Length: 441
Image (cartoon, rainbow, N blue to C red; front, top):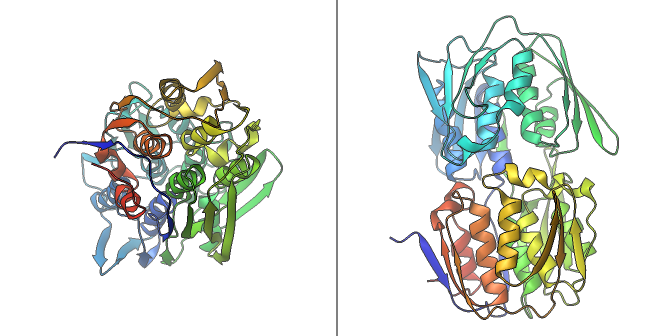
């Protein structure tokens, strides 16, 4: 089958209730922590995407038992450093930076060398940001180019470290936290604000962690060598997947959507904060707490009079995966929207900042860039009346999904390549679009 779709018509008005894919970040973290627990953990509503299934394959190759029983995954862990690793073991993280970077943290005490590889896109990404702090624990890590493949050989003589995380990367922070689990003494982390799923899971599992925060940084202490018991976990919906339908509804005429049971962790809801500032009609209903994470239904209505917004950079980490789709709202806004310090976008699956600028210009939106800062000159009457061809951008699922939302919102005749990229994070994306009435060939 061709790995391409065609969209020739804007979506018609809709009023629907949907559910989106489960949270990928939480799915991967739950798998990795279950592999270190003592006993059988049960994970419900696990996201069955390529990234998450690669996490399952990795822990199996490291000697952990995992099987699917009905709609649940059962993972048998043997405690900290409970892997049974064979000689010359290679594990593949596919496209997932979260998996590759976090699992390195779990391997700092490995008695045998493990080689980690990834796909073409992941192999272009910087791994020195995690290998350098992990080396300070005393572990042996080799990489010729500061990228994958990476080989790691652990040590029984780990030492705690002081680590200053400056990028706002939850992956780097979490990798160090996982390494600290196997390390005697107290590891101290000063981290620029980023997603805090790992911290919340540590608290839920009663691991010895202390956290203090100010406006810009979190100060984290992890005491190592504390075993923990198996657990049950029901993964909520992913706001990164939800974001595409939030924006589609806001940009569509006479439409309304309710998206059920979404993780609204404050370190992830930058898109909601930003879009509300831009006059989008978004509300949170049926709020609940689940094992440290807050969930809610998200209700969105068609939004008139969208306005430009000067986005402060402190919101960047809470919206880092959603900026591509936020830019579509800015394209429709009245006035200028500005975004600052977006260099991290070019460290993702593809150089997303570069791609976003090219994309917006291609659909007729005026854009100005100065280093990693961006200005988007919105056009409330934007209407596309030409053919648009979107090529394969290093299998970046978010570029593909953004293109679909633009086509359904702004018109034009679109040919969008790399349909299979959504399998890494959101396999049911096109199915849900069709449920809303989208005509996709």
